[in-house]
Each structure stands twice: as structure tokens, then as C-alpha cells.
Image (cartoon, rainbow, N blue to C red; front, top):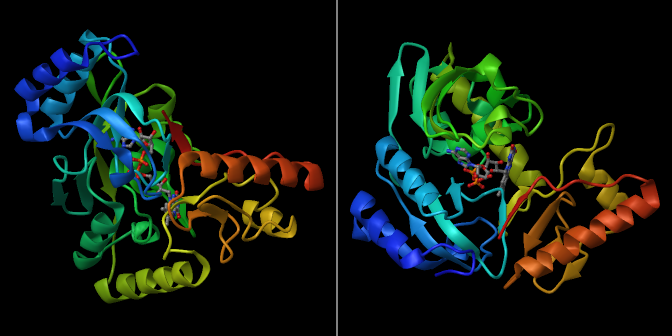
Length: 307
Ligand SMILES: Cc1cc2nc3c(=O)[nH]c(=O)nc-3n(C[C@H](O)[C@H](O)[C@H](O)COP(=O)(O)OP(=O)(O)OC[C@H]3O[C@@H](n4cnc5c(N)ncnc54)[C@H](O)[C@@H]3O)c2cc1C
């Protein structure tokens, strides 16, 4: 019996029946599955092969009263040093199919945004260029309406196929998703994205490539991509830029243990070597307190906390 009150041994056996022995890992370190490279062990780490298996896995978790968490690329996540007492359901190995019909491109939830934008470029389809440097999955991107530079998911999404909290599957149009700045009905109602269909524009592959190369260059110049992080640590407060407030507060390079405010881009907390989740929390809290005391603005984390 785990301390959260579910029987992880018998749940593991049930999950093995669904996804096979190789796709159920016990005490899997989450530092291996997050771009921060931080996080203690998850009780169970499961990789379903398709949407039906996702549904069965979640049913089994509910039946066993076990907490579960759907994982994309782990690029917006800080997992605690104690790890996660429950089941991580990872979609980036099994749900990676893409199909194209004219200007519509459908991607399963585990497809990487980078791969999707590359594929669209090769096919001469424009609209996903903004996503070429975001290291997340289609599911994670729909969940929080990821965006960069001049674009966001809401601009190009047509519909998503979701697994609702009651276990039913539905297709929802973009207008039904309440997509806003880093928010969605998917997040609010605990839905799981199984796949997403984008409506793109016809374009010229070379022009699309040039645009993507330009965005990549701008990102490489400004962002500390050489160090593990979860991207922008804080949401953009209305009327301000988080990075500028942090920089103006004199916090660039401020460090606690192995975590620090990036010297290159103050909006990023980076893992400069061996950071723990506690180190990152210490930096986040110090930044929040200093910025608030100097400018009266309380920064809200964009990074999601787990465990
Ligand atoms: C270097 C760097 C640069 C970044 N730049 C940007 C940027 O420019 N713009 C931007 O918006 N973000 C950026 N990010 C943050 C991150 O990449 C995005 O938010 C991305 O959309 C997260 O997707 P993910 O698959 O990694 O989600 P995860 O981190 O795996 O999960 C994040 C949340 O999404 C949920 N989720 C994941 N998959 C699903 C699914 N299939 N169904 C339902 N919920 C799901 C998870 O449960 C969790 O709550 C950056 C991150 C890094 C490390």
C-alpha cells in the first residue's frame, strides 16, 4: 500500500496487462523526463501505445484510487525531490502519429511541436512556425495554449480529440476550449488531449524555413538554451515583462544551490548543475518577494509544480 492509500503493486500488475511489462516502470526518476533534469521517483511510469490504452490506463488508475498525471515532454514542469506518489502516464513514445489531409494536419498528443512544425514546413504548410523552438508536445501545448513571438496554438488549432474526466471521448472545436494566455478548458476540466487537428495555410517551404531559422536565431541569442530549464519561469504580468522586472530588481545570476536566475535572460530559472527542486523553489520565492517589494508586482509561476 503506498502512503497515498492505493495498492501500487496490484495496480502495476493491472497496468502490465494493459500496456505490457516493458511499458511499466517502477520508481522511475522524473529527472530523466523533465527539461529541468530535476525530480525524484514516480511510483509508476507508464507509456501507453495508443489512445485506447491511455483510456484503459486512466480507468485502471481511477478504479485503484491512484493519483495520475499525464506527461508530455516535461518542459513546463518542476517535479519535487520526493517525486510523485502516483502514476505518470507518458504520451511521447506511443502517441506520435501524424496525418495530413490538404491543409489540415492532425497530430497525436505525444508528437513534439518541433517535429510538427518541421513536417508542416516540408509540406509547404504555414502557421506552426512560431512553435519550432518550443520543446513541448502537442498535448502540453494545447493544454496551456503555448505561444511564442507572434503566434499561439489558438491561432491555428481547429479541434482536439479529448478524453474527458468521466472517461468519455469527445471532439471539441477550438471555440469550445476557452483558450487564453497559458490557459484552457482542457486544464480547467482535467481533460486529456489525445490528438489535435490544425488548419494551416498554403505557403512556400523555403519562406517558411527562413522564418523558422530567424525565430531560432532570435531564441538562441536571447535564451539560455545551453542550460536545463523549463522555459519562462513566470507568467507575463499585465503591463510588464517578468524578465525586465527581475533584471531591474538586480536579480540576474541570483543563485540558491544549483539553481539560478539566468544571466542571459532573467525570466528563466536555470539548473546550473545538480539543482534540486528545493533550490528552484528557493529562487522562485526570492524573486517573487524581491520583485514585489521593489515594484509591487507579485509574479505568478508559469512552470507547473508536481509532487
Ligand atoms: C527552453 C524552453 C523554451 C520554452 N519556450 C516556450 C515558449 O516560447 N512558449 C511557451 O508557451 N512555452 C515555452 N516553453 C514551455 C513548454 O515547452 C510549453 O509550455 C509546452 O507547451 C509544454 O508542453 P509539454 O509537453 O512539455 O508539457 P509537460 O511539461 O509535460 O506538461 C505540462 C502540463 O501539460 C499537461 N499535459 C501534457 N500533455 C497533456 C495531454 N496530452 N493532455 C492534457 N494535458 C497534458 C500536463 O499534465 C501538465 O499539467 C519553453 C520551455 C523550455 C524548456
